[in-house]
Amino acid sequence: MTAARAGRSDHTDWCARDHRCNLNEHRSQEIVVDLPGHGRGILVRVAAANGRQHAEIRLRVALAPAEPAARRQLLSLLGDVRATVTRALAAARPAARRAD
Image (cartoon, rainbow, N blue to C red; front, side, top):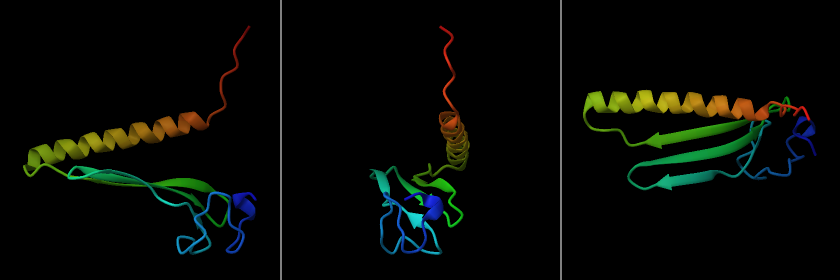
């Protein structure tokens, strides 16, 4: 079943099929990367009611106690998030054809 046709009762193949599906969305089980004391990342695949799919990523990163260092960390995180989104967009493009 495609996500575009998925309704409240018609789950996608990857859907968690439980309370995560709400507001006419389908949500996968969470994929968690946990670095105790340092941070945590959670990835969820989501199909909206209109059929559009997206990845939802939540990050929790321990910041330095000193303000200048914490700000540097935040700037670094923003740069990394931008690079990650850019790589994901590039991966969705069709592969270039090789001239033989």
